[in-house]
Length: 236
Image (tube, rainbow, N blue to C red; front, side, top):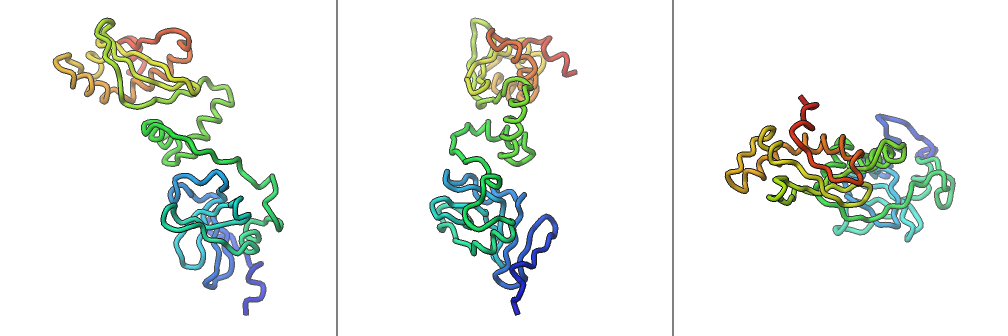
């Protein structure tokens, strides 16, 4: 007998489960869907993760083109799998038809980010890229200063000023910040013997250089910023 199976919802370990047969649906609204698919199509809205029966875990998404919920296992290997809409809506406690506005998340937008920015945002989100993006957006919204992202590990050596310039993104605009040879020598072992010395010093000092940049840049948004020896003293 399957009587009442569709209504037999249970909460267990953060998951919402349907009946215990092979068509059982297990949905985790807090599931990290980006571990399965890095990014969805613009017409797909994520609702967490889903497992059907004993099958693999996939992304639960509402597909506007198909006008229904689908399970996505991975892009490029198989198309989205249509789900039993009545079961999914019962678990999500949604009314029939397209999800109401109050249940929908914002549209997804495909963007290209430098690998260093993805790494930074992922670290900021404690391993979750989406969480890192939300944290940066929330801080910016709450007026905690400009959003500062470090572009990549490339840099320019400026012999005339004896500094090394590197790129940062400030509120979406790319600009350069400089760090002096003196600071690199005293703090990060730069000896000036060959070009590789600068690369090693920049790699060794990456975290401290970024920390000082985040602290000082908000007061130098319209002026040149050169990081000197004294700027690193507060890190002692």
